[in-house]
Length: 542
Image 1 (tube, rainbow, N blue to C red):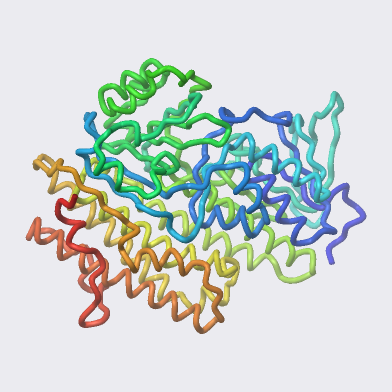
Image 2 (cartoon, rainbow, N blue to C red):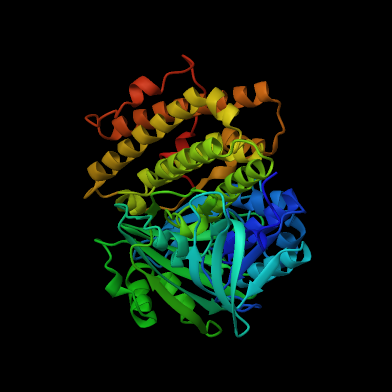
């Protein structure tokens, strides 16, 4: 065991938002004897509805909150069960029922939730304190002194009118974009993903089912819960989100390529509404109806960022204090779940007197590889977002990549299992190579489509009706032994190969001269692979 008596606390967490409080809860659930102190600048309770963005969860983050942290009852009772992602290709149009729509008609088996961040973080603060965490809200960090050897770190902060210096074995930066340790250690790293966002919340519910009285269109979803989805209104170079909050508000946001849609065209509420009237007039008309008073408005330039290092000598970074990709597909809580789990594992090893530095190095490599692989889904891909041919196929591919590799590792409790990653190295490398090749193919397909008149007819692309896709989602919950789990991942990568070959074939049917980007060599599997997507994904369907 590491020395305990010469410190005021074992772990000081800088920041008591989503990343910091969930880490504190996970640490105490893992080791009830661990002394954990959280220093949070905001006073609790915080405001509901208009506190922070990042309300949509996907499978890894949802599983982390519900099962790793044991919060399933709270999520079911106090937040909105999500009806999956939904995409409308509706640039400049009011006749939503005549636009291509992608989504599920029924709930997929693995749950996720729309989270009111204020309500959730208030609950997390209470839960942390009930577990014995020393959670000091309204605290401002003034200085951090890290020790390069084996002595204690020190954090000086102001709280309740007093200045205190706290010594601890570990310091974790969970301070979000303030990046307290990140700035001190000069760890910031830019990336080439030039995207901006403007967002706001309004009172009341925005229900897409109110946008049309066409009975056939309304009957596509059973039950009629489009409003529960993370609804994406898509167009060239941008997407617009609508997320319902259980507190009675609706979260809205424009996310766009910085070159195609400059931030200064939407950096006030008035400008954002003018932008919506041009690009998504049906949404703008809904927001201008009574009952949707403005709650807040924010914007952020070049929100995506990396980090040179997330583990050091008994310090670590988690959440946005480390890195942030893009809100499309809502990966933020996923990366919190993964980084927090890595941190918990490393701290447990260090406290047990085991070799922890080599694990920290490997976890950092894995974490950065997850970041780099996931970044390929977003970087230089915003031009595709209005393409009714390519974008629906991309979304299916991106989900498949996520559910085939990273999500199963987390659900199976193997995300920190270095041995399993070693065993599956070949499968992960092939899956990564398939994804890299596919993103390049999709990008070229979209460029070749540019300027072509694509169909704007009414069709629904129902993900629920793709049997293997449905099963890939359901199978995340399976508990398998090591051999069966390795076989499952191998089978998932084979599925990626079949799907890749089929998408390449379809792209070449549209553009015979399109490059294969390495997919021909990678997408090798069964000589007679099963169909991955039905013909309705490539043609109009009622």
